[in-house]
Image 1 (cartoon, rainbow, N blue to C red):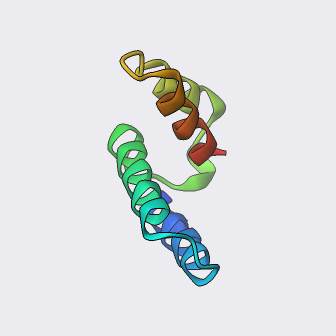
Image 2 (image 1 turned 60 degrees about the vertical axis):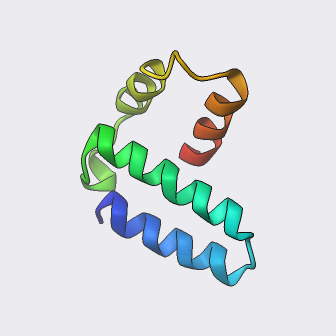
Image 3 (image 1 turned 90 degrees about the vertical axis):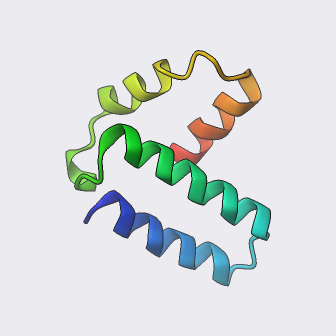
Length: 74
């Protein structure tokens, strides 16, 4: 399953659970940024080091913003 496919399923679940429009918009942005970095690859092909390297490129972010990205990835 591609990252985009997995995110779409996740997004639909959160929408059904009544997550706010703001939260859903934020999740959508985070998924696009991750896909931009990794490419729309198969979930099974993502390795820990890939995610770590992604987060290491975000040195310009404030701690709260970085925390949000980490929570999204989890």
